[in-house]
Amino acid sequence: MFKLLDRDSHHEKTEADSVLLPRHAHLIFKHSPYCVVSAVAHREISQLSTLATSLPVSIVDVFRQRVLSDEIASRTQIRHESPQVLLLRDARVVWHASHGAITAVAIVKALEALPGRTTGRDDG
Image (cartoon, rainbow, N blue to C red; front, side):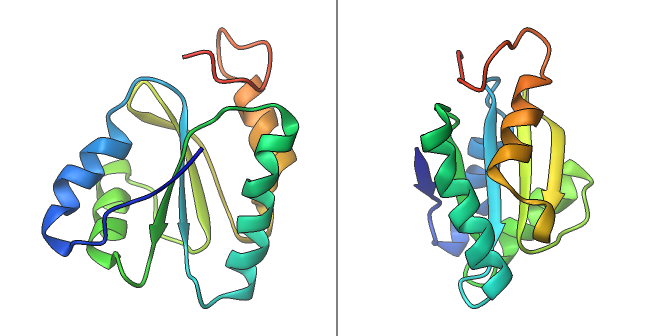
């Protein structure tokens, strides 16, 4: 379910493409390993599996992968925050949240609001 992105700073464009271009629904989680609010958000995202969702999650460490984090912000036109989640489908952001608004329930509700979706499961 979770994919920790490559920390090699020479691959930001490739990594950005890998998380921004897929057509299936997926989540980008931008976080700081040194922030308590990020730790709380990480726990919320970890709860997604208990809510019967198979949503793929790509994790971006905003300290070690600053260039990638900035590239994602630039290409999505969504101001960088940390922690932050971006829900993408058909290679575009359809929902995003930051800080205390990052909850498993909010993410599932955003998934259920996607056109053609009836559950929190990622059907492709």
